[in-house]
Amino acid sequence: MHAADAIHGDLGMVQEGDLVMLISKSGESPEIKILLPLIKNFQNILIGMAGNEQSFLAKQSDIFLNTTVSEEACPHNLAPTSSTTAQMVMGDALAVSLMKLRGFNSEDFAKFHPGGTLGKRLYLRVQDLYVHNERPKVNMDTLLKGVIMEMTSKRLGATAVVDEKNNLLGIITDGDLRRMLEKDKIPAELMAKDIMTADPKTIGADALAVEALEILRSQDITQLVVTDGNQYSGFLHLHDLVREGII
Image (cartoon, rainbow, N blue to C red; front, side, top):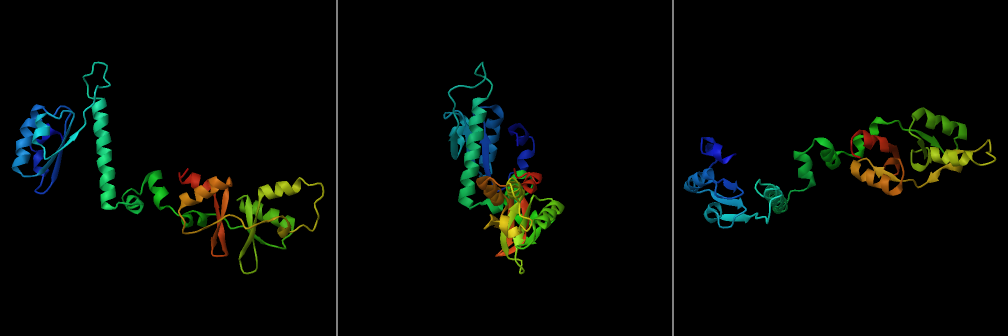
């Protein structure tokens, strides 16, 4: 609250046991001098923050935080500019210190800040995204024409290669197809097992979406195969992360 508002009624929101922090540039303003004795009467712990160690506020505070600056950014060295920045920095330092002391972690942050991109980076998981995608797959003996048709119909630029028990064996991407088509001769009997990449990059459905992003970036790829153990579950594409604002 503003100090002037406090002495005209808003001080009623201060309760017994509350810790009160007063922030001022000079620590000598009239409203501060009126307010301080009232807070003292309530026996609240008082933290003062000001740019003058000899000020009335500094001397009356139980704890004093010094935010003195050598010069204001104001061309006339009058308007609080550098001093307000110093007090904002001090406020951030207090907040971070309290986070550490209270053991406030990323899960807590996600609980209280679920909105926006920052919140999504803390709680959005792969399973929230890949389930909306098609799940292209072929078996090892699928002919090239069948591979192309599966990739074209599912529009993910890739297909998984699985066995009869849905265990993941490999992946075929549109890049694999382009490299194969650049060859002079393409056997008519070419199968999925002949062009697939074994041991593709995978991720579990429970992983955070931001973890998937790190893998995609580090490996310079655009899709990950989602698996449950050895079982093929689907694909997560870079576009899924872009759509959710993770990037």
